[in-house]
Image (cartoon, rainbow, N blue to C red; front, top):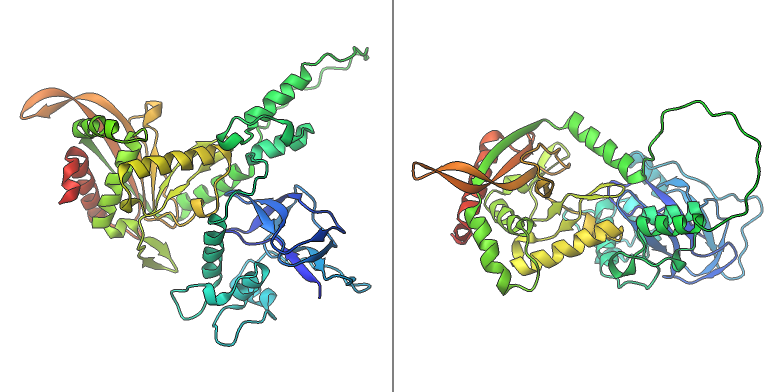
Length: 447
């Protein structure tokens, strides 16, 4: 029996995906589990595996198409099977509500002893997931439970040896008609970056070409230049606009004497293998403060405040195509050396465009650091559904009172942006008091 190939849901908030390329052609034999296509979501570029063995047929989507989640874009025929005459591959509308999702997902068989929503069962069937392996916090398996299981499975897979490249590099290579495999990558693990593609294109353009005489053309009228906007930038703009318009923000700013923080870094560095940054130290201290003030680690959902058991700190990273927030999971359970190694790995992958969905998911609190750009203080926008985001300025020498006398000390300014639906001013202030105490006396995290 023919099996539909859908645009999969690879993230809980994903509504569409962009088909980058088919890894098989129509009429090719495919094997269950082998890479079938490559898609780009607002978070990452991933390969999607074939959910069955057979012959790929009825491809209805082309590279570059933006496709709603749940839309059928091809079928896989069983050996010897043909598509019945007149049968068309249906294209479902985007899943815009749970009722539509249940209607589309209808007909998927679920083992009698397992309670699961129709959409959860459909997604599990697409990816050949045994629902008995999926954990749920409620009595019925939902879409989110299946997606969380799928993301964990994808994160555990080893690299498959395919050519690594950032999404922008792939797009530029297609536009310039360049072969990615022939371009030397300068990113992590040899990943091809946009700069590598542009350099190759410029080198090709510099090659001499025969001169051709053309009649003079009238100068075109000057028009405003439209800057290119990537998919990631559009999604970022949409989500931050929604956050700003729907979340009641309030802000708390405080200065902390960073003298002992500076000495802690100087004392710790010779004993650790990884290069330690102030961001690493602050991740450690923020995680400890969140453990004492769990309300700042909660989230808003279904008109209720929901607690998070894990402390997963996201780091706002600026990349070529916008802003991305990789997540350091269970940050409170690691020492400085492990935090530094994980932070460096996440930032390198973010810049190369090779982060996995697991590395971009389940953040519970976010840090945004602009201190390296000489910024003293700024207000950040809350990253929903999180309760707060901490904006970090630079550590700079200032004249401050010490024992009643003026003295020059390193000082850091921190601004906490909060969702007032989750946190009130008193709770947020108590969190900041704890964090300032940890910064000014790092050993106090042992109390």
